Length: 109
Image 1 (cartoon, rainbow, N blue to C red):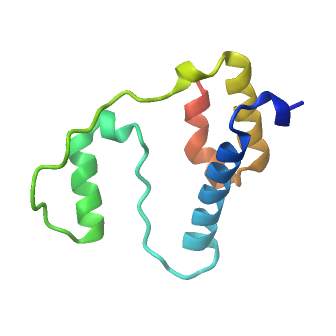
Image 2: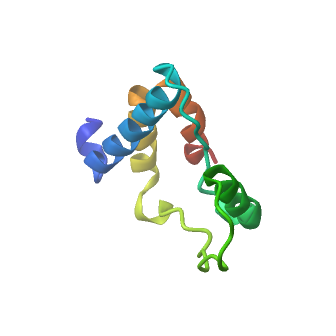
């Protein structure tokens, strides 16, 4: 059973729903709300560009050096392959197409 095979299922459910609601709020409601999508891994692969993009989006000047960001945290080691597959199935079943488009790469190897 999918529900019993996922540890912390309520956290994963909230994560998917938060993203679903964020995409609906910023695009589907026609409110013309500016948004910026910052994939987590960009802090590892393009840290300075990501920080600059965030500051630019927020229209803020860089006041100080940002705190040191510890890269490479994925937490995959806490889950076995069956659990990861179950979480992927949960995401696919609950996520709006746009949410799945922005999160599915976390389940691909």
